[in-house]
Image (cartoon, rainbow over the protein chains, first blue to last red):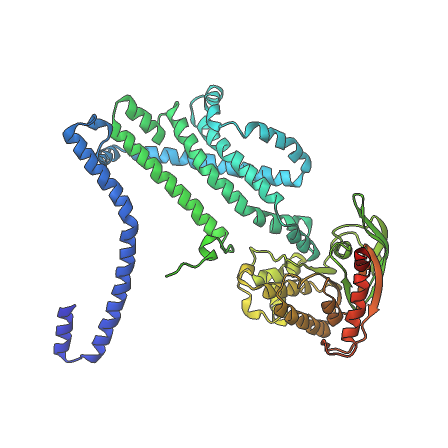
Amino acid sequence: MNEIQTTLSKTGEAAAPALQLNTVRKRKGTGLQSTMGMIKNVIPYVLFFVVWELFSQLNGRIQMFNPLFLPAPSLLVHDGWELAQTGIITDSLLASSMRIFFGFACGATVAVLLAVLMSKFSMLERWMSPFLTLVSPIPSLALLPLFIIWFGIGEFPKVLLIAWTTFVPVLVNTVEGFKSVPSTLIRSALSLGASQRQVFTRIMIPSAIPNLLIGAQISLGLSFSALIVSEMMGADSGLGYLIVDARNYFKVTNMFVAIILIGIEYSLFALLLKLLERKVLAWRRGGIGEAVEKVR
Amino acid sequence: MKLIVEKVRKNFGERTILQDVDLTIHENEFICILGHSGCGKSTLLNMVAGYIFPDEGEIKINGEKIQGPSRQRGMVFQDHALFPWCTVLENVAFGPEVQGMPKKQARETAREFLGLVGLEAYGAHYPAELSGGMKQRVGIARALASHPDILLMDEPFGALDILTRDMMQRELRRLYEKLHTTILFVTHSISEAVYLADRVVVMKHGVVAEVFEIGIQHPRSFDSPGFADMMARIERLLMEDEEEVIV
């Protein structure tokens, strides 16, 4: 900066460039602030890995327990990279992503369609509700061995398990959403000349979407558990399989790599859902963020 | 347009909400139904809207029995009932759109009615971003955009603060004088009823107690001759058996 200033003043164009420099400096200032903020946010994450690294290194020296049990992050990066070069990581990620995507999409779609039918035909709801009360308390993972006996160890039972895990929370929440549409909204739509079908597509569905998304968020966590467990039982690909395989050969670093990848993949899917929610529910205001303004 | 309520009775379970209610509303009339909460005034309005049906008697509009909600009878609710996921403009355009008007034309109509209530600048906002009075203006614009024969209003200003309420009453009167829509307005405020209406129908315990012709010149205010007197008369009628209970 100083250099620039001196060269500029040498050329004798002091006033205008000084102004320019000011703006440059200002822009740089705000940039610096946002970088500072970013650093502040990142510090806890960095600290976590640094402490882990130091602890593992220390353990490697004094042998509190077998160092193989808790490999250092640096070793994980190294071994993870080696593993990636063999193509196993890409394959596993791809296999797991496909399963969760299809399972989640199928489960959610069927759940929403059924919820629509249930809200249209009270007869169906009367018959479905007791059935749901029967099956919804059963953790879906308990069904996995049964699914394997029925459908073998191919893709189908895995996708089915994920779909089933997704299905129940989405269905229950969407039905609840349809039921809690404010009656004045339906009444005003009817008084504005809307047909029954228009009331459904233009009032009931948008009203139920927040509940549907809550159901989807609950489902996503559960269906990831279903994914990993089903890959641990009778699979030859996927992140869950990677963990079991690593256990069989006592490659603890590979287990850690797989665990971390699961965390990352879940975060990505959750982020996608969050983005979708933000887009669909742009009309929503309020919440704690708007309730009370913070003192600066 | 002529609305006739004939010998209407309505029960909710064992309780009789309305009995023997007769009422005739003519074209371009501004009628207020006034009464304590629980006197059946909202029930009557909901029956005229077609949301619920009388157990006995009939409600006819232009000689036809009311079979359900219709765009003939626009409704404004106390909680405004705007669709929160639609912008203000989309809310007002909803009626014309579902009635089959092309989208572009419906928006044009909506813009026109938003202008009528002085909110043309807020078309792109969501209802949650508006104040209570503004939401209710949108509610009125939305109901009017369907060109109803009669506008039904269920304590529309009941949730507003007193200053906004005064302003909205003036605003509604201005709209009425401009459009001459027939209005059936439910309220529990005596001054609101006397300020707004041509006729005030006072209801007590599910029956029409008395109908007052308010012959006061518009624009009215508390100082208008006869205003205070009218309010006192209605208040006396409403308070009658309250005193009996105390004695």
